[in-house]
Length: 323
Image (cartoon, rainbow, N blue to C red):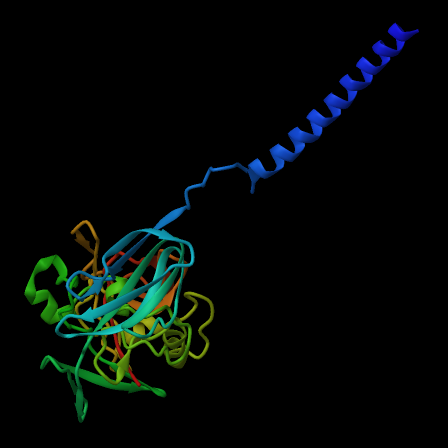
């Protein structure tokens, strides 16, 4: 009997010991685990890089150029300084994640939420332009004929402002004297955003007091010249707007309104040119997606003004509107 009691007590002691051991393990293990990590382990914080740049070479400088090792929520001061002949336009988040306190201030700050690129946009300071009779004199001394068509006052010649990145057709200065200069869309906009408004509100590279016409303003011109115009090319406005000479293959117009559209041709980012004498194309201030923008086309082959879009890196002419 005594032996039986001893065995029972031994088993009881063993059970109690196991229970106490389990409780002890629980008590020990819980403090060792914090936020999913073992006691004493400190996870490395995720860091990000902020890159600060400018939208055009030679237009200005920024500070800092870049900063790495930034944690989410960090506020970084940024400053933009325009070069001579330029003014600051605005800041933009061009990639990544961040929040700019005041995008229109040259000195502001950005809150970093991840890897981000912040771009300072500068625009050319075009100075003052004057009008005398039917002549516009730009701040660089160049003169342009102007004409009123309906409620709009247009340049009656293509813009010939020597902006950085613009070219003469075939890189020959004499062609600039005849056709004006050729520009890609970004140069035309001079840091401004796309506009569908009428007026567009985009001065771009136009003289002070003038602006780049929106797609809607081009449409206003076409419908004034041909009240029955509809769609992208159902009109006869091309014949009435084209000059009376300079177009190949018998494609001259009647120039009824003094717009004097010339077949100025195109340029391409790779450096080639084409279509002078055959086609004229003029940018609008309205984009069609990230890579394309609307323009107007006239040809020696047809009598309509054609509304369509081309890649923003191609080089075309510009006509400016008053206002």
